[in-house]
Image (cartoon, rainbow, N blue to C red; front, side, top):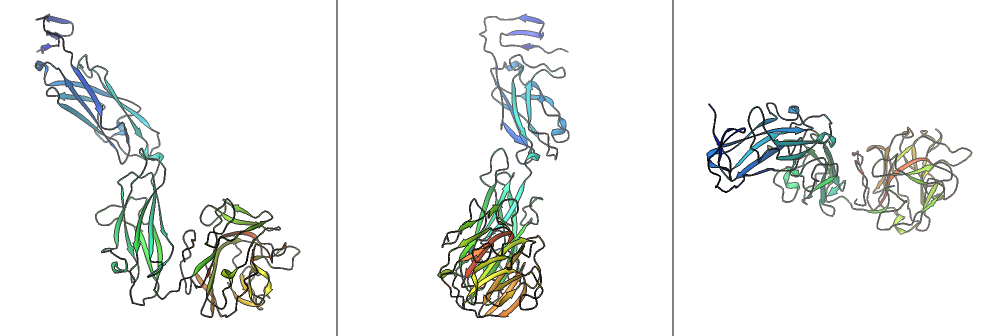
Length: 497
C-alpha cells in the first residue's frame, strides 16, 4: 500500500516521480526546519551528553506526524558512545512548532585520540525519505578528549603550623587541573585529641571542596579552592595536636579516584607555646637571592652563587654554591642578637663534599665572623677527632669557639635533609629530618649586633667553601619551634612561625 503526500504546492503524489496536480492556486508556503544542539562542545566525562533538537513550521497537516531521518558523520564511530547507540535514526514531529530531540552519551575512555567532530545530518536513510526542505541540514559538535588533560589534585595547608591564639587561622587549599566546575571533592579531618570543638563554628570534621572558575573546555589551567578555619582557644593543656586532612569519600559524596587518600598535616600548639619572629628567610625562588622577612636584609652575592631550578626541595629553586669562592653576605643587626634567649635555625641541605682542598677551614653553612664565644658557626665535620673529640665525618656542627651542638650523624649522602637547631630555656636540641639527635645545656649569650652572617664560606672569605645546595633557610628569634620529634616541613617555609 502506498501513502499519498501533499506538498506545499498542494500536489498529491505517491512518490516523487508521479505527481497529481489538485489546485495550483494555493499559495506556496515552504516548510521551515530548525536543527540545533544544546552545546557546541562536549567531553568524555563531565559534559558527556549531547542533545540535538529539531522543529518545523508550515508542514501540511496531512503529512503529520512527520518522520525526518538523520545520520551521524565525522571523526566519531559507535565506539565513542555508550553501548547500543546507533549513528542513524529519525526525529518524529507530531505537530508544527513541536520539538523532537535525540540524545547521545559520549563514552569515557583512556585512549588519547585527540578532539573529534560529530555532525548530525538530516538525510534519507534506509528507505526513509527526508523532506526536500530538510535535506542536508546539519549541526556539528566538538568533542574534547579528556584523556589529554588527566585530572590533577594537590593539597596544601598554609601556614604549616598554628596555635590556639596568635596564629590560629589556617587555610586548606586544593589545587586542581583538568577538573570541571561543580566537581565536589570530599575530605575529613582527624587526629589524636582533635574534635569539632577545636575549630570555631565547626560541627563536623568533614566537608568538601567545590571547583569553580575552571576553564571551559577543560584544560590544565590550575584552579585553587581554599577553605579557611579558625582554631578555638581553650584553657586545656593537651600538648601539641596534629590535625590531618585527608581527601576521601564521605557524606554520600564520592571522591575522585585520583584524589582519594591525599593528605596533609598541621601541628596545632597550645596557647602556652611561644611565638617568635622570623628574622631571615631564604627560599631560593629567584630570580635573585633575597630575604623575604620584614627585615628584608640586603644580600651581597659573591662568586658564582646562583639559584638552581633543577635541584630544589620546595618552591621554584634553591641556593647553589659551586665550592669555589662562592658565598653570600648578610648584614648584622639586633634581630640576629638572640642573647641567652630562645631561637631556631633550620634549613634543607644537600651535599656530599666534607673537606675543602688546600684549606684548613671546614666547609661552612653559616659563619658569623671568626670563631668567637658570642658568634655562631655551622660547619661540616671532616674528621673523627673534631666536635669535641667525638666527630662523625659528614655531620653538621653548631659552634662558637667551642661545641654547642651537632647532628651526631652524617648527612653528606647527596639527599635533602632538614636540619634544625632549637634552643629553649637553656637547652639546645638538634634535629635531623624531624628526629631529635642531640640535647645539651646551653646558655651562650649571642649578643653581637654588628657582625653579619656569611653563607657558603668562612668569615666572608675564600676559605671554608661549601659545595652543595641550601633551601628554605629560616632563622626565628624568640622561639624554639621544635622541642620533640616532628614531621619535617612538607612545603616551602614561610615567615609564619
